[in-house]
Image (cartoon, rainbow, N blue to C red; front, side, top):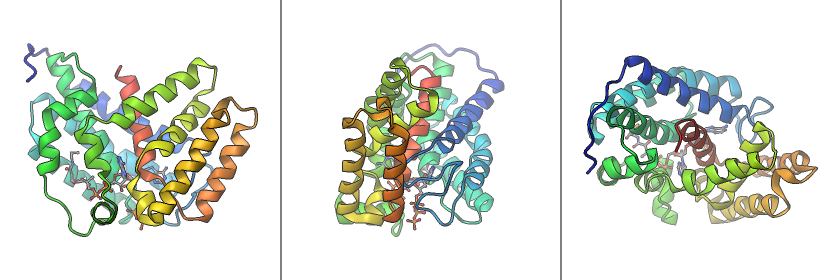
Amino acid sequence: MIELAPIGCANTLFDAIGRQAREALVLEVETWPKPGLVSHVDTGAHRDMDAALLHRSAACLEPFFARLATAGAAGAAMGPLRSIGIAAEAAMRVATGGVNTHRGAIFGMGLLAAAAGFRARYGAPQSLGAIVAARWGAEIWAGPVELHSHGVQVARRFGAGGARAEAAAGMPSVYGIALPALAQARARGADEEATRVQACMALIAAVEDSNLLYRGGREGLAFAQAEAAGFLAGGGVEHPDWRDRAAAIHRRFTARRLSPGGCADLLAMALFVERYGG
Ligand SMILES: CC(C)(COP(=O)(O)OP(=O)(O)OC[C@H]1O[C@@H](n2cnc3c(N)ncnc32)[C@H](O[C@H]2O[C@H](COP(=O)(O)OP(=O)(O)OP(=O)(O)O)[C@@H](O)[C@H]2O)[C@@H]1O)[C@@H](O)C(=O)NCCC(=O)NCCS
Ligand SMILES: Nc1ncnc2[nH]cnc12
């Protein structure tokens, strides 16, 4: 257990955590081409979502991320965090007319915001992901399960761990895949949008995204992973024609109605974690 002396925290710090979480969600949307996903350019494989809706959703979630940071700093266990998360999901549904824009992000980014609050309060040396795993990992598994959610159906049919497994393990896809991809692309001179596309492709190539499994089954997931891996093996965003190649992959996902919504969330979480120094 972490035992460190508390340090003072102003509300403005928690507000800043909420704002940074929202900005990370917005930056994810403002990234093109992301295979099958919504961006400022088009709506990909979605008929019920566009960039404006995702922006509205991100805006309505900002105060909830700030509340989660405050709760994290107060040493909250998973129960109070879950209550804030459920209220955030309800607010999202009101803001979007019932569309599931950011359920995964509420969960994962919400836990990272709580960890950022905890770390600001106690000065803990661990990464935000390590704090999530250490403080709330066991309770994440013990929480109530929605019998009919897409994630639960996919877990039953394919044994996929989804957002819970990712969070309980301390966000390995954020730390082991997205952050190194962002750093490497940037070090090689890629611009910021290209850097985000590279990280998105790296995530799709490796993550068992429950949205891909729900819409495309094992075959859809394998198709998506092979497409992203092919992009990376061909030089990724260092290839002179990278944008055309990524756009062609985006069209192929869209034609198959495949959308890696979990990877979109993980990209946003990596952008948030980067700003908080790991
Ligand atoms: C525990 C929950 C996360 C409940 O989860 P659920 O049972 O639904 O299971 P998952 O599928 O595991 O997760 C839900 C969302 O997480 C994203 N996701 C998917 N795979 C991964 C992964 N490997 N790692 C991390 N995150 C992942 C994904 O969210 C994004 O996609 C959604 C949009 O996709 P779309 O294609 O439009 O899909 P639908 O609208 O669902 O269907 P169709 O359009 O195809 O018809 C969007 O949400 C993105 O964010 C998964 O959807 C959790 O919800 C829970 O318990 N909540 C309670 C509150 C709580 O405890 N909070 C904790 C503190 S904040
Ligand atoms: N850009 C995006 N497109 C589709 N689903 C998403 N969920 C979170 N971000 C998304």
